[in-house]
View (cartoon, rainbow, N blue to C red):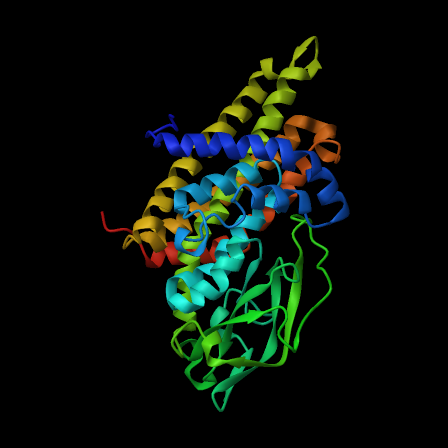
Amino acid sequence: MSDGLFELPTEYGDLRESVKALAEREIAPYAHEVDENSRFPQEAFDALQKAGLAAAHVPTEFGGEGADALAVVIIVEEVARVCGASSLIPAVNKLGSLPLILAGSHEQKERWLRPLAQGKGFSYCLSESEAGSDAASIRTKAVKSGDNWILSGSKKWISNAGFSDFYTVMASTNPAKGAHGITAFVVEKSDVGVSFGAHEKKMGFRGSPTREVYFDNVELSDDRRISEEGNGFDLAMQTLDHTRITIAAQALGIAQGALDVAAKYAHERHQFGKPIFDFQGVQFMLADMAMSIAAARQLTYVAASKSESNAPDLRFFAAACKTFASDTAMKVTTDAVQILGGYGYVSDYPAERMMRDAKLTQIYEGTNQVQRIIMARNLPKL
């Protein structure tokens, strides 16, 4: 299968066609209603789980599909093409569990990855009310109590909170050391002292629950600690180097979906006696949209290959593809609304939903302003 600048192995093309068919059949019909009613896309979860795609990244030794970074990108991309909120199911599962994959023991992986592959959810708890881009300033703390830890505090803007069964939580275990005093733990929804705030009323991705998570003196045994003491922040940043590529894939899918809608509409909508596609102004817009998406796809796929090999320049490429793809998604969806005119501004067509969804891809897992700082500090050596 040809994807522009290089040939992807056949298995990736087969995967794309399979996910695309599933998404159009099992997910797209519910996307509007999921967004309209701000409800969890249960149909999407059921379909993805049945197909082994809800947490395809889980290694085969723990019951998963063992999908590599590029395969996960393609899965997220094709789901996001029809429903951004549904694409957060595989994306959040990877984000939440990747610290465990990177740093956990075999016993810990067996304990939490196997249930994840079987249908449980896994969320990532780093951000707080006063710790967004400045993630090192977190106040949630874990205090040693004999052989155990007592976790207290709260986490903000947690995707799939309440739905997920497991949570990777970054907590300060030595506040005097700042970023070097943060440790990573796995917390379970059933732990005594864990509770959730109200659902956030969001601009987009309305079908993915976003809630605050509260920890009221939650007692954790030391086998819940998945990083060395003080290494949690480094693990959090290492995780994001890999998962920002997933956000790029999500943005890419949203942009492609918007282009599909706009191109179809441009051929069907007649003004002044001919399809609006025949007007050069519209052609130029569609051409620019397609060109930018093609460039974003190349950059994202390259970043995915670097993620798989843990390349030295991964940090730059992860930030670059996330920034470029999300900026592309915002521009493409805005132009799609413009091409649809009045129809683009109402919810009868999916363009306005895609535009709302695209905005978040420029914000979460590190704002694009922060990504540009990261890129500047990690310029590739040519």
